[in-house]
Length: 317
Ligand SMILES: Nc1ncnc2c1ncn2[C@@H]1O[C@H](COP(=O)(O)OP(=O)(O)OP(=O)(O)O)[C@@H](O)[C@H]1O
Ligand SMILES: [Mg+2]
Image (cartoon, rainbow, N blue to C red; front, side):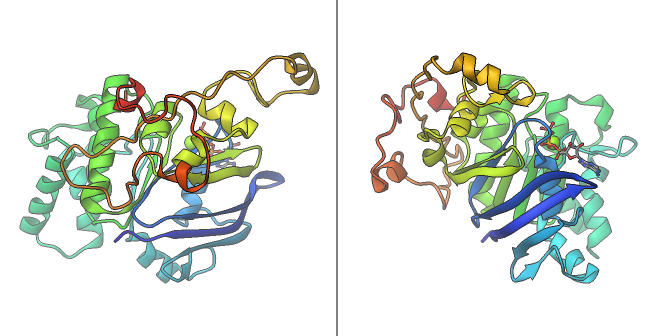
């Protein structure tokens, strides 16, 4: 299960400002994909375009044979039911307790009885570890709990695609590690297609099957995790390894003087590729590949020390 998203030649501008152009990629069904990019490169705009909240200027987003960019409002309404979305701040209604927040999509989009709704809400609250917190208001709980409540709400309609906009922003490293494990466990359990926008390099390096990088108004690269983590392409390499040396500067692109000053500096060697985070619930993920498989299949020698199970990064932080 899970459905793929075929994005072809997508472009989006606001007025005269091009946000990104020629974005082409297929987000594979049932897999976990991460989208990275400097602040302001249009990651949130991309997610909004995928659910039809924003219309692209050009290109198509095809899901189960329907093009989101050109379909009727009625078809869009149907396609949206396939999606669960976790917004950056959880986007909870402040005056409703967690139970009513999580129940909201069911009351809005289905004709289920209150007792059926109760079963589903409690199941999803349990899934995200929030049983017992149903009566709390969003303002009374921590940021990490709000994210998990947002996730429970994103899951109540049994989505085929879950979009996460910075699920880990504002969380401490320990809560981020718990949330990442929850994401991997959920993917194994519900088998939906996950697309995660994040700034957390450790998340990007350890969680997904695929990584994409938006940079300078286009998609610099999208592909299997091992492909990007072994890539020598300067932008990809700089971003995924959080380095200062490279084409990306404080204000997105470095000018000629800055690049000239750097030209004799050597790029530090690529760090080892960590093991991918595995489910803790004993359910195998359908899309999980053996460590190093992509590298072997493509004749790429991974950086020394890769896939060593004892590395600290390999534990997912
Ligand atoms: N509705 C809108 N109207 C006009 N401009 C917009 C609109 N939404 C976004 N933008 C612009 O599009 C650009 C990309 O915004 P977006 O929020 O997608 O960036 P982002 O990559 O998600 O950044 P961050 O990592 O900081 O969240 C920004 O310059 C923003 O000002
Ligand atoms: Mg954003």
